[in-house]
View 1: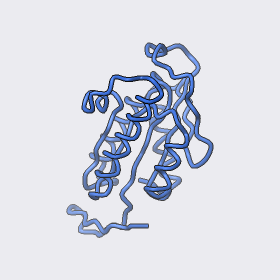
View 2: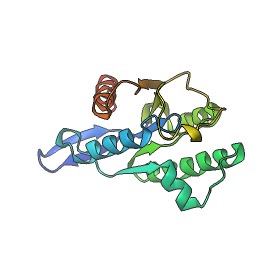
View 3: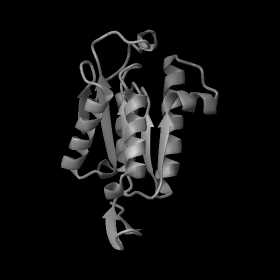
Length: 176
């Protein structure tokens, strides 16, 4: 486990902290981007959670950046691997990363968690049962996580309520 010493300029306290990857997965329309942006903003601005640098990588932005409009299994796997490559680079440069990506293939996600280190990684599985505007983008071969994840059902919760659950879980796990 790599631990970084961070000097907090306001309190003149040195804080021990792991650099983290927070990865939101789930079908389109489950709230990954909204909640990822909320967590990104929270980590950047909350004084009690002062961070060095925090990046947010969203699946739609990634597809634009890599010019990958292929939604077949091959295209989705390429998108996940591209995301993992960017995330690992950013993470290895002492930054925290928030990711919002469908990432339907469990094996690829588990291999990446192991490579980054479970203590430096938090996966959020977002799902809902109601109809949403992006249902037509759902992938039939999505594999839900089985280990080391936080389950968030966004069906009846507002983004604020779901975000509160996320923060509560992260506090309990001492991952913020």
